[in-house]
Image (cartoon, rainbow, N blue to C red; front, side, top):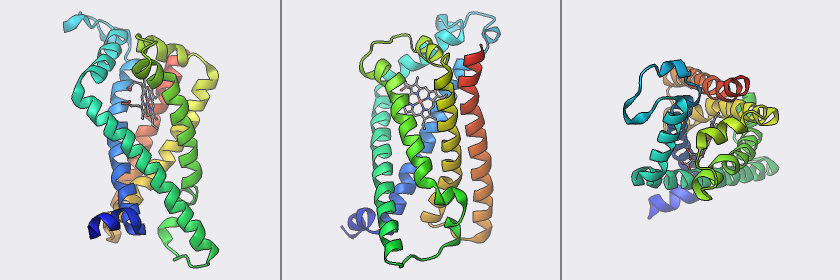
Length: 228
Ligand code: HEM
């Protein structure tokens, strides 16, 4: 009971929840990236007929998406993901409100970890990502998974990325995500109890490399499709 109360009501509990949901979302982002990299596999990669009649990136991407929608354990994980995103966003709003209140009362504890440009702008970065996700879900998830009006997902994604404004929007959203990831991974470890200076040094470095690789790989997908 005390654990339950602490988890949702105290600032430490909220930060832990933010860290756990954030790490789960990162896990999704890695899988999501691997799946979407299929979009940019050159057709020369398919010299022979693959089993199951998969002969091109087009076939492979649609087979992968079909599997995601029709394999029930994945559907279950998707629901956990939606819940994690909702909790992460609500928690972020509560923490921000609390911090603003504390600032108003001039009662904030100074913490060096929150002094970087990224940490001071996590709210703005989070809002850009939020707007990006709403547009992103309306473009693909809603049409393919919910309404079922666009059965050829590969075709839908390619047609969408042929529009310049979409590519620009994705680049902005993905760069904001990259910055958000650097600080998010670092503060998740801090919230979950990694305090040693050396360990934090290593985690900061890993977070930076990880965010850079994720940003570059996500960012090249719309650009390659646009110029293809
Ligand atoms: C170029 C990069 C991306 C492409 C091509 C892409 C493509 C797609 C597509 C086609 C879907 C609908 C089918 C499905 O559910 O898998 C989808 C769903 C989704 N995308 Fe993306 N995406 C990209 C980047 C991102 C980024 C950066 C985020 C997060 C910030 C994101 C978050 C989501 C979420 C939360 C869903 C719903 C997942 C689900 O229902 O299982 N995507 N994406």
